[in-house]
Length: 262
Image (tube, rainbow, N blue to C red; front, side):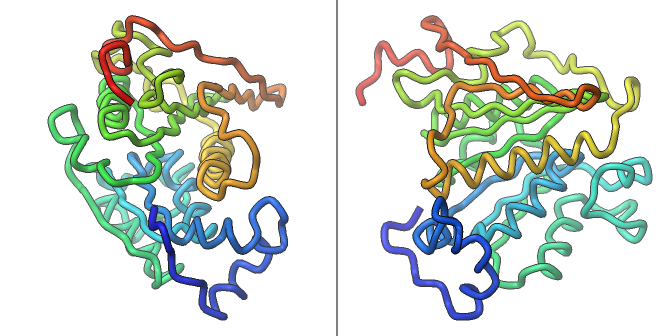
């Protein structure tokens, strides 16, 4: 994030007036959002609503990562796409949505698959990564790259009527990373799919918008504790939410800081 971000123009002040009157955000927080760079990995059921509210909050720079194409079955929950986007790349379609929504946002695309061998350069220099991908191999690659690059991570997942959003800062000596949570047993792509199990479309929306709110919490700086190491579990059937704390794994091969200097 820039040390001395440019002030907001009168037009931008008017656009974000409802944010600015909130004491927890104010002008300082809105300027911080405008200076922030968020990498959004996965533009599906979680990434679509998250992108809408990240853009609406005034995040100044967005990097969009997804190698998939829009399918008709996506439209039940992936809210930025229309029938015209079917068959087109999600990253390109998402950039088109952003161009129609706010032309001042800086947008970069990566429409290839993110993996352990290319994740770190994609995430380097970001202020926050929001991962809404659907398999453990990708999530762990993103998490490990975040630790190596010193970037905090919001990891979100959803299925059927349940979802989760966790905030991880494994690059900090006393904080857990996502690998501390799931361990090393899930490096294979062994997640259940929504095609097999189903998913309530609005559930994906709840998880995505909650993740966007947590991103604003981290970046604006005035909404209290960033909640590192806390995993929020969302239940759409009750409905309700509970929170659990993820302990740092002293033997984690990604974020064990025993041999590092601050």
